[in-house]
Each structure stands twice: as C-alpha cells, then as structure tokens.
Image (cartoon, rainbow, N blue to C red; front, side, top):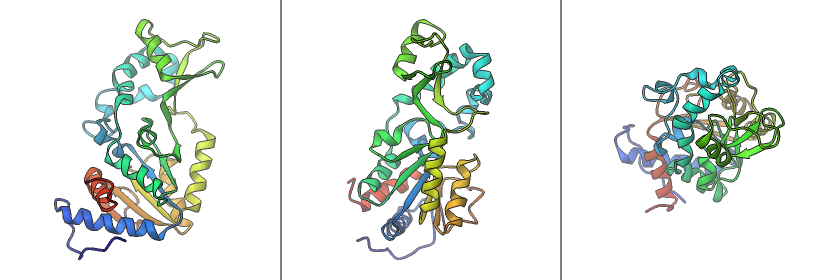
Length: 266
C-alpha cells in the first residue's frame, strides 16, 4: 500500500526523512498482528501540556513533592491550590496530531492498544478506544474515606468556594484519581498493560523517557516475548541500544507524515 522512498542519510530537519520513517512505521504495523504503543508526557507537549523533567517542565513551576501521597494528606489545601493553577488547566487541552494518528491506527485495525502514563485523557478525546491508563485520569476523583467516585466538574465547582473538595456522602477528603508517589498503580490497569506487552509482536514506545517504573519495564517484557521494539522520542532513552528502531524526532512532524501517508490529513 505504501511504497518505500529511496533511503537517505537521516536528517531531522529534512521532511523526506520523516516520510521515510513514517513509511517504514506503517509497513511494520501492517505486518504485525498485536501492535501496542506506550505513550509518555512527550506525546502531549504539543497540546500545550508540559512534561515533568525538562527545563520548562511542570517541575520547574511546582515542586515534585506535591505528588507525594503523604504531602497530599498532610497539606491537601496546598495541593489543591497548586493543582487548581497548574494541573487542572490541562483538562482544557485538545488532542494533537500524535493522539489523532494513534486513534486512526486503532480505527484502521493496525493498533491493538494504547498504554499511557499520561493523566490528561487526550487519547480518548482523540478517539482511541482501548486505552490503559497506568497513572489514572485527572478527570476522575475519589473519596479517600468511602470510595465514592466523582467527576472533576464536582471538584472544580467545590474549589470555587472552598479550599477543599469534600465528599457529599461522608464528608471525606476527595483525591484526584491519579497515582501519587508512594502509591501503588491500579492493579487492573497494570495487569492489562502487562498482558498487552506479553502478547505484542510490535511494541512502540513514544514520547516517553522510559525511566519511570513499572511502565519502563513493558518494552523489556515485550522484547523478551519476541516483539519488535520501536522507540520514537525526541531524546535518548536507556533502551535505545536494545531497540530494533530508534527514531529521534519531533512527534508532531512524524505523526503528520504518518497521517498524510494514511491520507487522514491533507
């Protein structure tokens, strides 16, 4: 379906190279039966959501300890003050071309699942249906006392007039349904992600530094189970030497090239 262009030396500023990589990417997807992608913060930066550890990332604006579970329970008002200004605005973001590209690949039957470390819900906004959220979703919240679940709209409404969102059922403190430091990952999500990684014959790590565990272990799981491993990221990762393909490039340009080859954009 997609004819390969003549190979050229890699040049990240040469749009033809993006097309060459995009063609090979689609060819590998076509020959696979169980393609799975793991996404990280780099996938959402083009939607205006900062990553965590870059010089302009979230940790340059708020201290990383606000995501510590002990800090949340000891200083919930301070957490919500910072979250109101620096976390919840991400829910207004819209999917970028990478989210759209992954949703189209699933729609066309070329991608089985998205495993994501992100909490922004943009994969679902773009149309992806099989999404495993390892770290939860900021759109959801849960009472820390009785377990009652809430939509973020309730939390934001309460924060307009109160420093804390409290449960309507029991008056307990409501917590964003995301994974904090020193908190275990949702068992169901972890099991699903592991199952997808073990069954994958093509595993793609996209926009992730592959330094946060257990998410960073899934490429190893897939590779040890016989999968081809592709890493598409702006920067180097600890697993570059292990991967079968490493494409260091801007995801927005790469995704646009893939979508054009799929004739999903003009």
